[in-house]
Image (cartoon, rainbow, N blue to C red; front, side, top):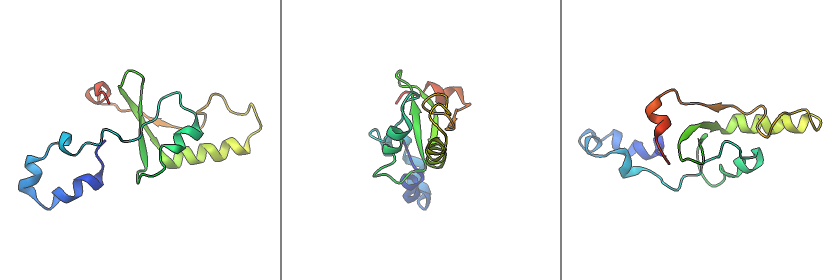
Length: 109
């Protein structure tokens, strides 16, 4: 994962920005979420990091989309409001944004 925070130092240095590639500043240990992970577990992925989204990565290592912190929190609030059985599946009300770029979908993490 490469965040805007990681890129900022290079924006003011055009010559340096031309030399740096994503692999140079990539965070291999960045938290990620599995497609079948429970909401409460996914929330734990946001602890200790400054990020608004987490990548959703399948067991095959392929990026499936992203999970936003705000959608996750809204889903947890809705889950508390509804009676048991009001939700269908562990991620009801939680959107995963799917990447439309086929090359990105094949990217393994």
